[in-house]
Amino acid sequence: MFRSLRRVLCAVAAALLIPLGAGAQAAHAADSAAAGAGYWHTSGRQILDAAGRPVRIAGINWFGFETGNHVVHGLWSRDYKSMIDQMKSLGYNTLRIPYSDDVFKSGTVPNSIDFSSGKNADLQGLNSLQVLDKLVAYAGQDGLKVILDRHRPDSGGQSALWYTAAVPESTWIANLKALAARYLGQDTVVGIDLHNEPHDPACWGCGDMATDWRLAAQRAGNAVLSVNPSLLIFVEGVQTFNGVSGWWGGNLMGVGQYPVQLNVADRVVYSAHDYATSVAQQSWFSDPAFPANMPGIWDKYWGYIFKQNIAPVWVGEFGTTLQSTVDQKWLAALVTYLRPTSTYGADSFHWTFWSWNPNSGDTGGILKDDWQSVDTVKDGYLASVKAPGFPGGGGGGGGGGGTASCAASYTVGSDWGGGFNAEVKVTNTGTSALGSWKVSWTWSGSQQITNMWNASYTQSGAAVTAVNAAHNGTVPAGGSTSFGFGGAPGGGAAPSVSCTAT
Image (tube, rainbow, N blue to C red; front, top):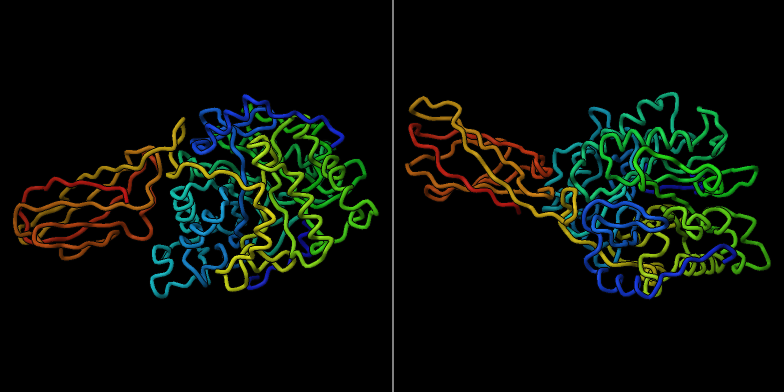
């Protein structure tokens, strides 16, 4: 959208149609409930899961990491887990999370999080990226996939190009690679939206290294895939192509002549943004044929990519306050254009609505201002294009949803008779990320813990149970963490320890 018009409150059918055959429809009916496991890839205009089953992204934007709060908004009101649970209960299956490069700076910490009455307890003391880890892990457990959106170079505002004087292209790419590495093996994160809403002077296919967004997307996409070749690369449009302008990020007219070409096949998903009059006026809204003219507009800017079977198309942002009749007609027409799931299954356009947050000034959100109540009218418009959820667990790569399991080892570091220090190493032995863990053991003697770090514990007689601290509960598949403690007296044999993924 026209980002200069976005006021974030509370914080700083002419084309070729390819019908889904009866056999494919039957396959969809059989597999829809189980589809979505593992990493995803593309085939023509569809996105397929690790087993080759088609999936449909039907999700929601939850913003805040890109603002001066450096964390998703609304945590000043509610626990993050209850928010994600509510998203799932409403039928959203994917979460688009915008961020700015500020979250990679040392010392960047989230603010405006309420920890009272036990809310967000496991986020205390975490930096922004560690909070993001928690959100990703819990979303995966709930069966939601996550798309990370590089929304801004810094929290100050949107940029026309993918770089600024303060945040050069090298920083942009380095941080994209860092994200790909951070979530390597956690297939909850299925892809990265490389940069939000490129606009004039950004061009598509002009050949100027400084302004050609298509070439920049190829450089960044290949960098991400060099770290994790299983990720999807989401590429937005520009504002103007061959003199024809549209929404920021919403003009993909150049794809037909200049497609994004990456080193790994079947990874590109094109992303369009589309908005209504509550964001800005466009000429098509005053056309006497409105809203019947809109399918032709969407075909021209981005719909042809899907209809000609070039690649999948994801409408990464669309939204409205729904206050005007024009906006109501626009949203109804767009939802129809996106293709109802009951008719087309996953052979459809993908989408994430803007936004979950009520504090987007020119669109509002699915939630009302109390951050709890649902705008049932707005949510109701989306009912026909919602789609099945995905297997929970957010597992490692490969063909399944993954399982969570762990093992622990106990090592005595020092023993002076009167006391001892020991360390316990927790290793994720499963194929999905751990969201939390606990370790238990029983001593053969009279040992008592005197202090513990990087975990909390309870002891009853000789039986001890330790659970993760807020900062080390999330452990990627194959990864490990540790905690230590002091105890007395010394001289005892090392006990057998067990680990449970919780």
